[in-house]
Amino acid sequence: MPIAFHDCSFGYRRKIRVLDHLTLAFGRGATVLLGPNGAGKSTLMGLAASALRPGSGSVALDGLDTTGRKSVKEYRRRVGWLPQQVRPVTGLRVREQVAHAGWLKGMSRREAWEASREALRAVDLTDLAERGSAELSGGQLRRVGIAQALVHDAEVLLMDEPTAGLDPVQRRIFRELVGSLAERTSLVVSTHQTEDLADIYDHVIVLDHGSPRHQGSIVSFLTLAPSETGPERRAEAAYAGLVKAEV
Ligand SMILES: Nc1ncnc2c1ncn2[C@@H]1O[C@H](COP(=O)(O)OP(=O)(O)OP(=O)(O)O)[C@@H](O)[C@H]1O
Image (tube, rainbow, N blue to C red; front, side, top):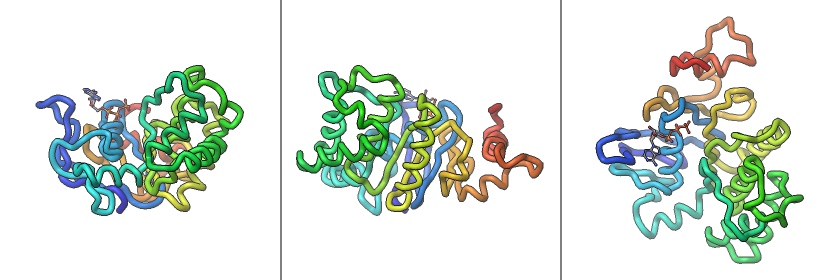
């Protein structure tokens, strides 16, 4: 199990807990994290990325804890993260922003330049490599964020709403990217998009009010849909049944 949450509690404010004694693991392969607005998905991803610290309990990657000063550095080398908000670094070109992310993860300058080129190719941004990152559209900037998560070839990739704001062509490119990455990396992708889940992911976690409503294989998730549901609506129906939401 790459990343394991053990008895983990977290709140942004003292008395309001977003996660309460959560025990959960992200498995190998490609996992999709679903849940309504405010369910705690970004919080969970932030904890898994070690950007947030658990109030109690632990988050660990193969036993490497996020709370120790030494272990967290090693942990961050092994994890790539696309946060929900990608920020342009004013004054940096796209290729510099991505290379900088690699350098921060411990790559040499040369490795970081080479890896930046590769990561930009993977997200179809080669043509914009020389553009100032503050001059990009929302979807282009999100793809810079994906490239930043990919750049140091992490063994676990956490991506928070990677396809939000992407056009249909870029969503297809992302789907293909997940397919190729899942062969050598564990991936966790948080999204509100339920189409094509069965083609992309191996596992599903549905979070609601900070608790997992469902965790298991994509096959077992799809069996939760009413039997009369057509194949293209199964994931949406399974999800709606779990969170009793209108989707
Ligand atoms: N910085 C913050 N300060 C205080 N409360 C926060 C903060 N960020 C999130 N919260 C609260 O924590 C809860 C979980 O938020 P989180 O962003 O993790 O949900 P989410 O499942 O990612 O939602 P969405 O699908 O809307 O992105 C919400 O009730 C939210 O209001």
